Amino acid sequence: MQSAISRATLGRLPAYLHFLESVTSENISAPAIARALGLGEVLVRKDLSIVCGKGKPKTGYATDALKSSLKAALGVNKVTPAVLVGAGKLGTALMDYRGFRDYGMEIIAAFDKDAEKSRKASGKPVYSMDQLRRFCQMHDVKIGIITVPADAAQSVCDQLIASGIEAVWNFSPVMLKIPQGIALENENLALSLAHLHSMQID
Image (cartoon, rainbow, N blue to C red; front, side, top):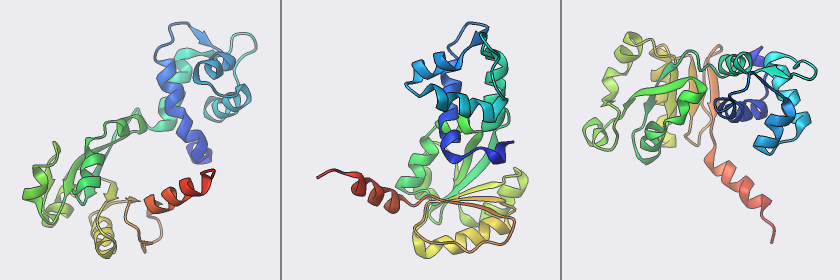
């Protein structure tokens, strides 16, 4: 079911879950959720139907069951460990962000060519690149995050895959070559900024 959830819907699920954590009633309706979050009722019904089916007439959704379905869809029930390569300013900011747990992921360590310098910039442990493979295998890490310059991204990606990584989240401005079976998500910050500029009204 999770593979059928669109990116837009996935982006709204944490808001639903956060709101439901404050609900004390046994049942909750789609209109009530829509009003609380400032969303359209039809949109909320559509999102929730993908996650847990339709609510019951008059009573809506069982609150606890709905929260469980949302957590399952987000992967919150099982936090997956991830590593980050490139502990510069962007990498450090990502390591310091605690919201990833809402999506079932936690960065447990970072790797950098200058581990000693980087270790001072983050509360998470930062190791040298020669420890990457051993660490990933010891901790069964399946997600790798790349925040290195473009000229180093492909090499880092290759090392992550050789270490057993099955999913790559790439913040480097380069198209990576990956083997079949490896999940890749590109986060193009420059493209996002260009999109914002194109939406501005003169």
